[in-house]
Picture (cartoon, rainbow, N blue to C red):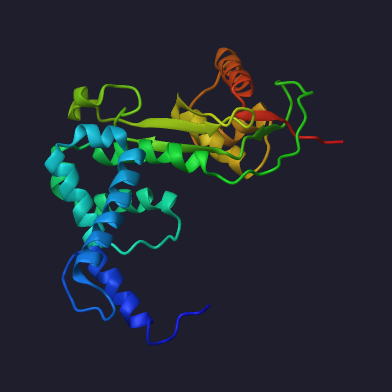
Length: 252
């Protein structure tokens, strides 16, 4: 049954109170009841964020974590109706609003992204891909697993104890995250910038290794000799074994 126009203002008042905790008279409610309701909703949000960001929760002090969650809860109106998407909005909120935390922990944004991307890839929609396992790595058109993303990081948050990361670690890092279509398991792989660019090519269409190399060389002044080409071929062979590359495009 649709809500009447007269109930909508009360819903907005309740939603506003739930976020901010600022008391206002809401017809048909008891103050004790809506206080318990607000506490319940806050606990759902907090528990969801703890589940999504266990490393971040372990990094921050108890006060820092509680303050950031309360700040998010009280001042951000979530845009997505899906609870599993809410941690992404928290990530964006921290990037925009928690500058003090970012100054203290310069790798904080990277850490949040690293933890979020596992959720994002795990929850990606299943997409049917037509491919064949019969092909040759030397000339086959590589078919990329659609549940796969490459992210850029300034700090190696995925490869080093968080407490041991400092500004000296700042650099250029690329992480490939994918979901195995057979097991559903999400895995991570650090890759070189060259491979990060090649995966961008493959996200648009299937390429052979020679075509990937040609595309990459069109943008750079790097020289790729025979030994380097063998290294690239071995890398993509390993990607097939890991189900990052599913197989080869059917051309007949």
